[in-house]
Length: 366
Image (cartoon, rainbow, N blue to C red; front, side, top):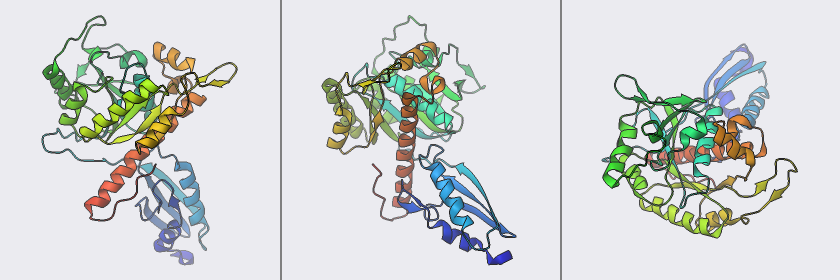
């Protein structure tokens, strides 16, 4: 090869680029692939563990610079892609979902904390960053996901299974598509369990990296049915800074522990009021409660989301904030949340892969 540049030399240079989320270099993580050299020009692929990687641009720039600095290299052609891996595999008695890589439950210990708003905007933020995403409206008593997406439809079929509705690039299934707007669902546990199981076994989810489950509030039957039916990658617990919400959030975390569902972290919603006109922030529900609870329970704190009027307006109109105002401070907050959730899954998947090889697992990234 011209000028003595070899693929091994390129890989050696890429060992100097460390992913801060894992604390390991690109070669050790298997992210540097398809290295080729022709007449001094180097081409290779940077294969990220998620399209929502918070350091994606930085890693790209550092990888290009590291290779360009090799003596004899005349040019660098870098392709970036993302390959999301499953955190866990189904256990005995659970339904395998070959077209869904990671199921993420979004729950809360009490109602009124904005759980559905977080679920919808989290799903949309992941989708806008390039992930393949679905959302399942698991709040069968109050299925409001379709309202926030601005969609009314009857679920169709692909000939064998229920075909999800699609809007903004997200696949959607909700009990609201199967019931009238004013119909009250008065169901006992066995009926709930059957419905939850059908949402997984009878729905044609198409090649999803992440399936977001909007859970009902509290610690009830749906969470139990979910854990018995499928393997859940983890749960995001939504709280507010208020003492009452924090107490209920602690119970929600303990519930997920009993169901062997790892908590990916806590997100503090309604953390402060962000005035859209004067841009002044006010801590109307208290300050720092969510982060303090996360520290007490040794959980990751995934961020703060404000009380911001356009969030409510967008949800009511069927144009969620991540679609309507993605560049606003609140919109950036949802994208930050999506990055942290995606990386928690990526780190967990990497740890599990190491465990299966009999090696020492990485320390989880907080």
